[in-house]
Image (tube, rainbow, N blue to C red):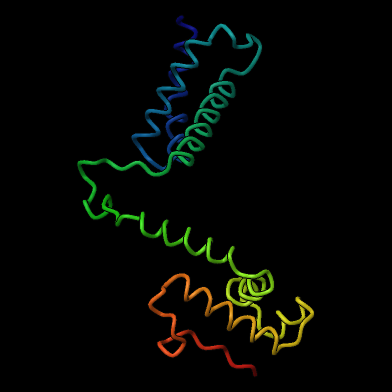
Amino acid sequence: MNDMAALLEPLIPPLRRYARALLRDRDAADDLVQDCLERTISRWHLRRPDGDARSWVFTILHNLAVNRLRRGARRGAQLNIDTVNEATLARAPTQEDGLRHRELLHALGALPDEQRAVLLLVGVEDLSYAEAAQVLDVPIGTVMSRLARARDRLLKVMDPKMSDASTGAPNLRRIK
């Protein structure tokens, strides 16, 4: 027991420095060093007698730090509820956004294949009319008419009040 304490005690300051460099948080680093020392003491019998105790302890600390960082990345940021601003915790409800998104996907699925392809290429992938025409192997005029029909159909499905094209339906882009 005395040889273990004699080997571990001088390692505490370097372990703390290394832990602080890894975690960049003083309290978390101190907790990490404590966990490292607990693990080292509980597994002291597994240490190679001819091996370097310093490198063994630093390996334990490093592996614990990596596990802690990975766990933190999976869980996300943790905030102290007593000191955090209420605006940070408040969120607008997202149910309507989810319903609107589902409705849009359903409306996209209801479009004919050629209209959906043009709409996705021009609207989502941001291809020009000429590039979309080349991808689909159709004339530019066909791309423009399919896109206009697809947008009109989507508008009618998503907002039935906007069924009249003169009430503000999106305009086609100009060809340069």
